[in-house]
Length: 283
Image (cartoon, rainbow, N blue to C red; front, side, top):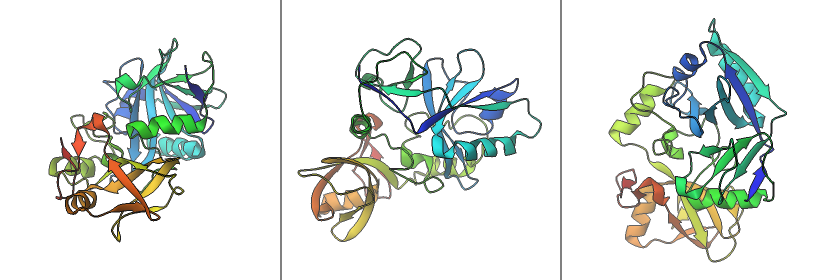
């Protein structure tokens, strides 16, 4: 049962009589439809539709909701939530002593949550608190993320610099296109209906170890993206799908620091590099 404590994550407990209504009108996911046992990706956006904070959200065991958020942005998130709170009956508590555990490739322990960023068959789960043997390391966890095309802020993209589509949140229910308005909703809905998402996460593979995070990916001499999480010969990158599609159609070499690479889109998304019309298309 591979598992590790994610020391760079903290839980924020959002509770109170108006917690559901407050979150439903603020974040990208459909809070009302959130099922017990799921840790659902979600985000708080800028008015321009870019991701200000990203997190996993789940129903708390007794009442309210749990936000699984990056530790280095948790204080800023709480301040932003407080700004939106006004007179709403809602509270925000950091659970700094509660460990965040991720596991995979095995039956989940009792009280674990399905990490909905991953396909169900991957068996990836989150557990908040004790109850699991920790026997994996960060490299193991990054390898699992790479295998399924699951990007995270910090290594793979910068907050305030990416749209939800660029993280596949339109594919993993991190964005709901049927619920009411939330911050940044108009821009995200327009991208969905016009099909104007030009960037997507891709898995990068090479014959030899890849260079470090931040290395440009090139199609010939044209940039198509930047390496994010790197583990040996595998990596993640958020890439311009139209430029990659054109390169594949023209047999233009794809490289990172001169190393030949190949790019694939996560199979679970149904996307493929089949068009040069500024977007990957559903396969």
